Image (cartoon, rainbow, N blue to C red):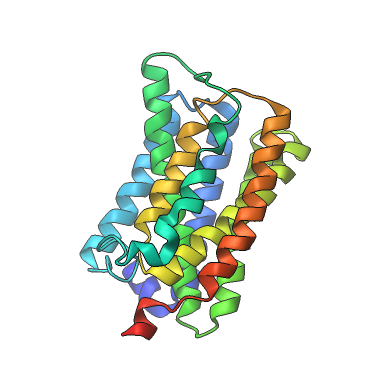
Length: 237
């Protein structure tokens, strides 16, 4: 794995993404989030990523070395925190009960960590090293959204999947811009985990869901325009 990373960082990132999609798609098609069989592969992915980063001392490169400085500059990430609660806007209704809900919450937290590391960490940083910032931002964001197409193979309805892809692309741009401009992936991991965890506690109201999606798209556009005007930590140094 280390040799592949040193030889071709983009291929390394793509293989991580493919492995994640091909492993998780059939599992999601056969088990609910309350199942331990959903949690275990996510633990394996998270452990593998963590070991790779720790042994290579890559915490700073992948934005895990600390919280961003000068929070005011990024509007304290308030736009991101607000829409991250969107799954709770239509009421409170836990998806599972007891230990099943606990397992599902742990799984969702791991999803936030794993997906941010492979899409924002590995893929975005690999493409950024090629010197094409705009291309790296667009591809990282779109790939993250398109990655949710695996839900089709897990039995999810096509229209629901398309809406989820659009929603994910909007978040992809927010996460990528926050990481690029702040140098820290930690806020993105937290926000991503919040979105997924809150989905286990929110009710299902179609109108509110559409309001949430529309709000996310608008906020994504405005917040990314704002972030684009900021200097990166490296340029300031």
